[in-house]
Image (cartoon, rainbow, N blue to C red; front, top):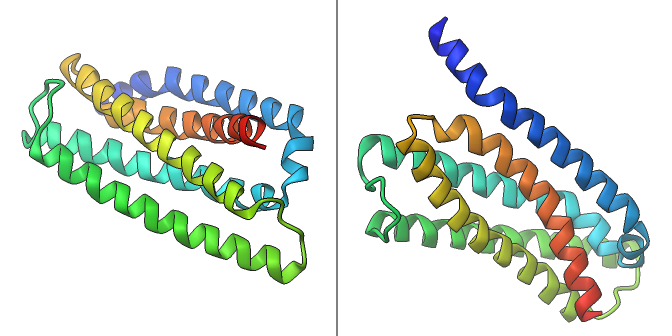
Length: 183
């Protein structure tokens, strides 16, 4: 019962913040629906992009927490071989997953006869969005995991719900920002 109370106390605040971020994400998307509808492939793959970055960050948080608990990375903000290996492995995973999503998205768009405005520019924007998010969230999660671990909190309980909501908010935000900048 004590463990349940600990998990509940550590998680309730972050779940409320995550819910609020989900609300902000929905508001942001509804405000920018014209931009999203103007580029149908974005509307098609946006949920998959949200899921992709959220899933990768969940795996990263879990791996960082495990490394901290078993001692394979020190609880300091410093470069380590294990951290570099995780970074490269997750980067390759996200690039391969992104490639599959983009190919499937283009196949669906082409098969339905939807016209794609500047396909290479759209491709560039999608890749730029996901890589920017990955690099920023990797650094954020690494520092946050160490901070929470040093405070005696379980980073999984706090960071996993928070980072999935943060990714759900930041993915459309960056995507639409890059669309506005480049198109």
